[in-house]
Length: 144
Image 1 (cartoon, rainbow, N blue to C red):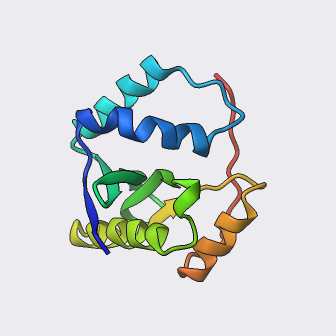
Image 2 (image 1 turned 120 degrees about the horizontal axis):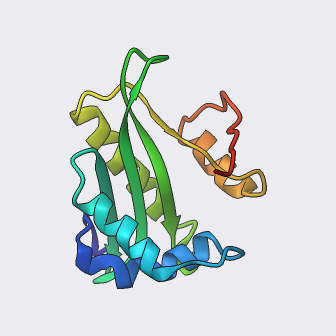
Image 3 (image 1 turned 90 degrees about the vertical axis):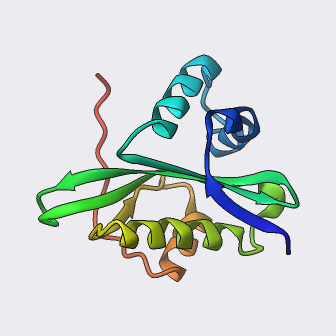
């Protein structure tokens, strides 16, 4: 299998954007604003963005931020995006991406990798539980 997981560059945005459309199908996306946020992540000292390419085509993406966390008394990684193209799900690519983020986080000495997942994403919840994640909190969000 010809799989490569690598750090994202600004040039990857056009390849990753269709994955965002799959990740948030009911959200009206502002492509220009997403590009600004994507580029900021790529150039950040505290964010890591990864692309998974299969046979040269980007089919997966994940991103995490390093966050100072009092509860953990240290730094954690907070995964704020994780998606595999719907045509390639169930084939192990998501596991590869998560494992890359876990290993990268461990290498940086981070204490935990956390993420949130919407209530309706039941298959994703099963996936994360199977990989050893624990359900330990609700996410509360307030629009500013």
